[in-house]
View 1: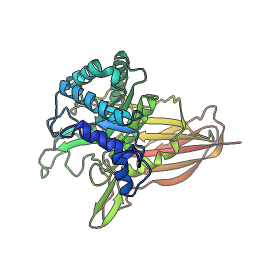
View 2: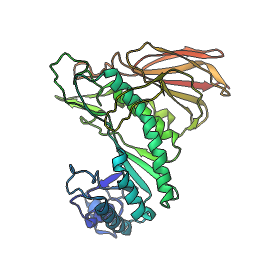
View 3: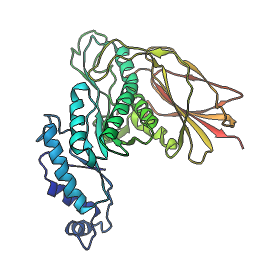
View 4: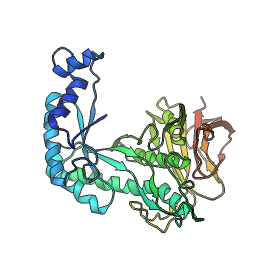
Length: 385
């Protein structure tokens, strides 16, 4: 996916980008330039986002809801003229009730030409030394359920606007709390002890959002973590040394689920709740302490469970698992990504402090595993033929 500049860029420039990426090397001007630059075959970029957060005054040449409808129409027309097969994404917003009119207006005025809305999930806001760290962590861990409810509402809004098969694309995602207090104060929280994109908390947060996306069926068509290197968690580089953040490993742990079929989960466990609002995150009310996603692998040979422990400052949770109708072998493969604290992270001095650890669990009629705090666990049941 590419995002075109719909701030101080023009529809004509965006159309040239489409032609450069997808145009014929002999029959189009920009395709010829691409070939001259060493890539004769088209890149065939399918997904294109029209602008980035243009509702916000922090963006170059931001605009109003009316202005964006006009820009979207102009960019869409120019880009589709070059390649009618591309799938365009319009800027949407899920940050709160005060922003609902952006989505409503866009869908009312341009709904028949919209296929996909984009969303940036960057929640958290300002925190300080008086912020309870457990409360903040639990707020992040429970936010996925609130996002899921907003997804349902948005999907119906899009259907009501005449979009037959509405889609959502999450084009930015990361923890977004900012420490604004006195870092020298002997308080409850500091910049070094809070959940940030470089910590284990990001890996767990991302997993809960991914699980919620899966639960929407085909509504969420893509999710992009923000970003890849140095900003937002992922891969870090400092003084010629490169290392991975925990969220990088969290993403890789989910790869075996790709192409599989989600299956139902019946979960009985305790819950967590919070009292405070953290900008977009409303108080969490009786959210399960575990977030469990189960997927039957594409070859139907494995049942894969991803388990997030949402609790902070508590003991490990004993989880008993019944694989149901899946005839599992007597051994379960276990992979765990965990840390001792919510702010556990890798560093230049300790680049592999937090990495996945693998083991096996022997089972009989029922499997019992201990799920540590601040952990993401993958359990793989192999079919017993």
